[in-house]
Length: 129
Image (cartoon, rainbow, N blue to C red; front, side):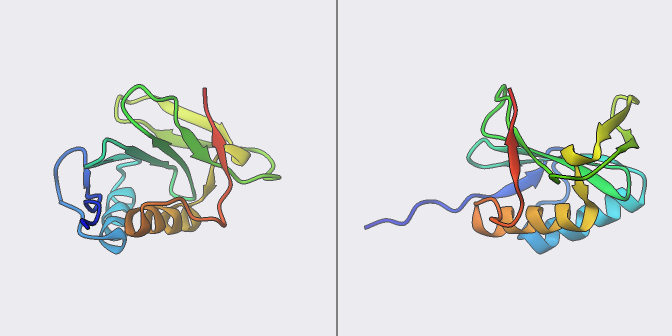
């Protein structure tokens, strides 16, 4: 009996390769602190993960494949809006806080997803589309 192939993740700009969730979180922290708010990872199974942060909160989206409307992590009951989400194309986005999560929680879910291949059960998700 053969075991299923392990899912591997990398940043879409191909640097650096991600060995585990902890490595991805360290790199995301470095990038966000350096002003790179929009970051994308892709998996060997075709999934894509976006993390767009304003340094305090993050929009985290998971797409099953290119073109999929995806789903995003939510913070039910969060009140207000946050801005400062700078996209790679220069666009500044603003999101309702209920459609984003605190940055620490976002990094927790990235680590969990990359280490286990599944979404963490303690973070609610909203299906887009």
